[in-house]
Image (tube, rainbow, N blue to C red; front, side):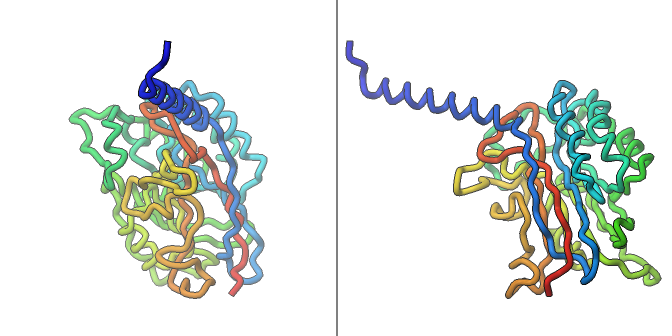
Length: 310
């Protein structure tokens, strides 16, 4: 019996789709360490290792993710920064604290994302393709243990940058920090400028969950030389060689993940004099309702900060 060409074509498309889905499910667990060198310190400063974590969206069953994050302590970071969306289930906090336990022994700083406050919920997948995929919170959102998380982090000495300023001294460099609450929930309230009596620092760093342009503008105006953010998942579903389809905020798709100059060329290059360094983490997780990644592996990043070249 001869198979109709249309039936053969449909069968081939079905197999291709199943193969792509299978790969996307597998890729979501291919945890990857990225490394970047950032020339942002004053001349003569010793290099600093900053571990940037974001968007774990941890579920209680994800023991492989817990184990992988715990192993990051072997990198011996001088500073740990998490840019939110740590958990995705009301019972995920113990696993998160287990994952972070070795890192909580080191200097750190954090901001929160929407999935630190409220559990994710099913959404129309087509919204993914919208420029702004935000939806209103339901009348009774499922709350997550954000207060307990903040208490655990601050008890360990990590700096809470939720619409706040702070500072840390690491490896002989004084770092001033400024952060905001989640811009994706419109909770960001940029802190008032530091007092005139504040001493000089070797580096000024901004921290936010979602890299909305209004936040980047405020941090550049505040004198930040480096900004760390997450939220985008690197696009989560990307096209090979073309990159992210969306960023889930108003940041351009070319900066969906990785290290970039913002708003223009990289600092230290022609045309980059007014730019800052922006690192956007693609994060380590997904929503439990869309547990897939395609051409966009989950990641943590070790940033090695070195003296400026100019």
